[in-house]
Length: 524
Image (cartoon, rainbow, N blue to C red; front, side, top):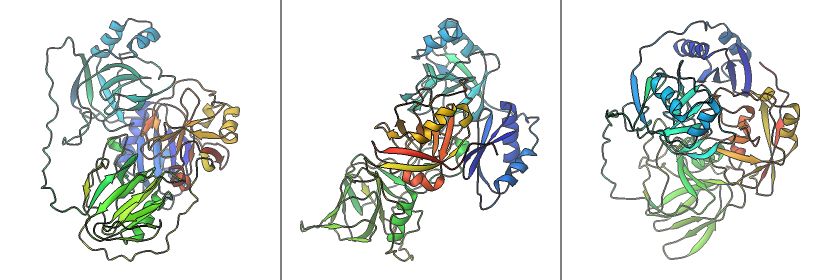
């Protein structure tokens, strides 16, 4: 085993084979070690998230190194058949790379049984392997910004099906109409670790295939009273709380508020529990009218806040202060001149049902309460809070403007040694501009000189964390944020320290980032 740094509360265990990875995963699942919060297995590695208050990293490394990884306990598994229309954009390129015909690619894909080794990247995304298919192809040089749901793809030794429309760098060979992920099914994921899979050519198969039965969700009568009506949403308004921790086995990342300090402040200002869900408002433009007296707060990115009364009087209020809205008042948030995201909390909390333990909406996984739309009505919990209102909340950092240079501390690893010495120096010495294609999944960065790799071989998919700086083949990094994929196949050169993640989530487009390493890269 080799132990590689990831950030201040995570490291990666590198093993020699997929079989060893599966064996260690089983061992840590069946006999957990105190202090480990979550594990994310992948092809040759396991990402370990731990609590440094509960256990020292060196003690944890020693305990894991003593585990037996020599054998995997075989488990009975179900067989799933997936019909495929083999019309993918990369089918010809795959055939050319392998030196075979497209018909032979299809034959190998349909005549060999696959098995899901692990799940990751997105909910329902199973990494499938086959001993006899011989369809090992590299990922694309530059990942696509959007791959349609149902796309059947190849990368390295794996095949998979994209369960949701998402970014990705796999080679597309076809498409299936089956839903790989459906939150309304008893088992949302059609396949999971251990599942056996047969692909069939949909144009030649006469067999019909049925999906698992959906659970009919109970329709609740709509509330006859609304406490506020959303009039405009601007770019994006989402429910967010502290996130969906501990769901990596389903292929779901943490998600949650991009600026957790601002979320907590907003809740404390109105006397809520600090982890209560609030509205995350991106780039302002939010406007709502209240239908009863409410105490609200706005934190995060500084913006002008106007209140228009029922009598058409208008006045401005401040962020980070409790705001009394009388029945009929309208509150309007302008575009912030610094930062990106503001948080709107209401005393008592929003009446919203959690999905898979959280009220956060994950934009990659498409899990959680749906994004807020204009005209939508929201209700507030009727139970009164017994917590005091906080009057002394302030931002914990200065929010960056588009013209600013933001310094982010990073831990080098786990794949820093895959890059040239010059590339590591470039990572920290040159400025990286945040591009317009950035979102909650990650900040896509651009600089004059791309980062060059020393090791050019394909990297087997491995776990990633919030703050990971992943470098695709074009050498322009992506800084993963809250809705990042759980696993990825491009090397991670470093990761932003946890205490700077809120700041990273508030960096606007065109601002520049300078990475500040805490030390040199070395294995644990």
